[in-house]
Length: 585
Image 1: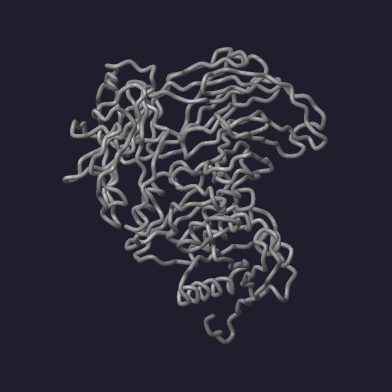
Image 2: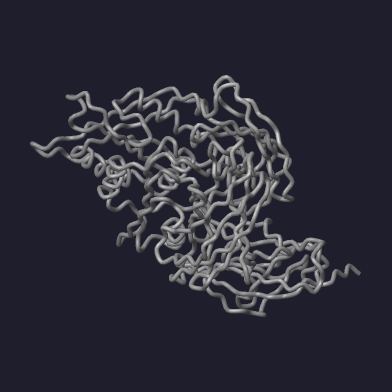
């Protein structure tokens, strides 16, 4: 710590140990206490600083600045780590919080608890806040990676924060970036999404290399969050890589023993949507997984009976059951890993189950986007005719929706209604809108893409070998897709779209709403050895269903990342080609 300045209050640093049941070992943590801690009975808010694998000099600098801040403010900083993303450490955080609350005079609620960290610790700070939003009210990251593999050892899965924004309802977030940081491409991409899709995100860029600049300003952010916390969300969504987890009082258990992500959406007393997916947001569902979702205690009257509707989103089939709340007022829903919409109760309950893009296969920023949004009554009674109003808190969004009404939907019935919008910013990556239906607020997020020039300079990999770039800069022969290898996409075939880069090709991520293109199979190409970011670049192995007729025109958007560390370039190409005739001879 820095040398004491005569006459100025000093923070006290104390070290603690405890026997961790989660880690199966004795764990140590350090608490930086305000100067007034020893002489008062006051309780203090806490910021958990998660350290990764910083050098001794970096740890000393971070500790010194944190101690200087705590000396002048009523807050405790708890330092713990090293933060590991795979295995038991992510599950250790609730135990650490319980231990600190038991040992120190903390304000023991989520509204007065924050988490932060630098580099790998910054990633873990964001990740823990997303996994435990019911424990943490604010989270910050000093130049942390935006993607790592996380989860149980043996079936950990890639976690890219770009796709997990919905986990942060009720959490204020802050990302500190640097103009010379080697991760700046990934930070800019995250900010382009979270600034519009996450509930309360802020960012600040410093003229700095990979470091933790402006520690006092970020601790000020947490102090402001303690003073004005976000409320617990009335409706929440959550995605989790662990097979068993709890969030906001709900408990989820499964028999999954493979890499995947369990997704809950729009969870409330009146129901939810669930799925177990290979990746977020559009990975294939795992129907073989058995899933159990249990509501919080006292959400329902003990021993009360509730009609429940289960809608299988893949085929629209429904089943109904009467579930009885247990002695603690909980309902347990038994499902599989497919996508299900679940409605609870005798009253009508409206949900958005999806949308189609009219006159297009993807939404383009800066242009008029026309949607047909599907509304479902998943409740137990007929919905009265109600007006629908659309709104968006995103800047630069103009919603063009004629006055509309949702007419008397019976239980299990759905209707598709139009809405259009434009976004002035041609670089916008996401728009978040809300449909207000009879006082019920239904969120809808729509990804946006920049305008793309059409190209015919591409190849189809349907089981043939081409020279392809992997790991950013390594190139060699690679067979992609499954088919007859004739360079065309036919029914029953899986294929990659490849764009030329010099005398080799780059496999593209395929984006489309075309029903004849299944994009749920995605491959990750690690760039860790190239740019040391922890990230990977994705490409799609698309599939043409057998039901799609030869000659059907396909419209896709192909996205490729061109390596230029640390400022990679993302290129988009509009591609059109027909479904081909299968010839296996």
